[in-house]
Image (cartoon, rainbow, N blue to C red; front, side, top):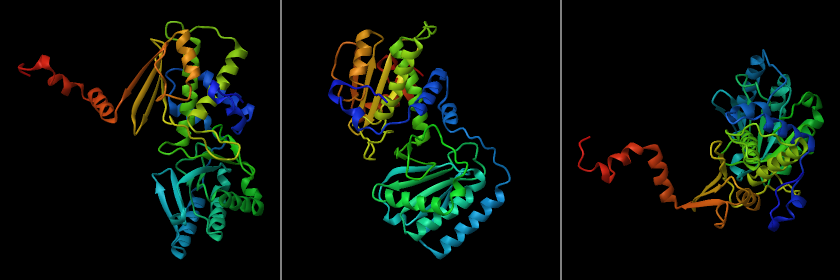
Length: 358
């Protein structure tokens, strides 16, 4: 696994937990199939495609609902709630829970889902583990995003051990588990995966956006635009480049984990990528409490070289040949957005319109 390594970060590959090359190759295939008009939802569906077509699970869902209601009546530390018509939340001892740091993912055979949820609740309750998780309702079972368990940093091992105890007692409930292409890191429990928390954004959408950004970054580096969309690229070289871009953007967006299990946080963690297929300009934007920063990488050799040398930074990029930078204070950014949303209001108050009848 390789990532873009600016000279100041030569040791990055040595500290990042690797991802299986077979998984990256599947992501590369999806990225090369991605078109400029491809929607994020389409990419997400590819990442979370399920082999199952669940039917007649309503009785099991109702039985689980009754089970959870009885649990919450006997134990005030167990609470449930619905997330629209898609998920049911189960919250256990959350008053002792710190900020969410990890997510555990399990995609059981839908026939085993409800029984597995029961056993997880019993394990978490017995160990008094602070945890919150959600499971799919029968109205949303077209993807393998079935059980998502949220953990803080302190109780990660406790949650992992609770899941392991369920696996050891009821291994048959894990038969037929699926794996989304967006889940990169295994745990000590077979068919259970872990990922860092992505505050303010759905993890699935973030991974899908990474695939989109990798394709558009690839197009920029290879000079693929509307005017010359038929550019031929070498297969092996292009594949290696795409592999590096995907993992590099994962790193930039905090999706990868360090070898010691901690998540990665870099200063510009909110980078958004935009590629203009008409001009061939790639833009990176980052918003923070310090304001708004934008870098436009021009479609030149110096622009592409500047991108690779500044791949993980937006706010600290120094003016140089091949790019255009912009910084706005929070107030200036707010005004810029307002002007874009309501241009007619500013047109009416502009000097050229003073004294005119509207």
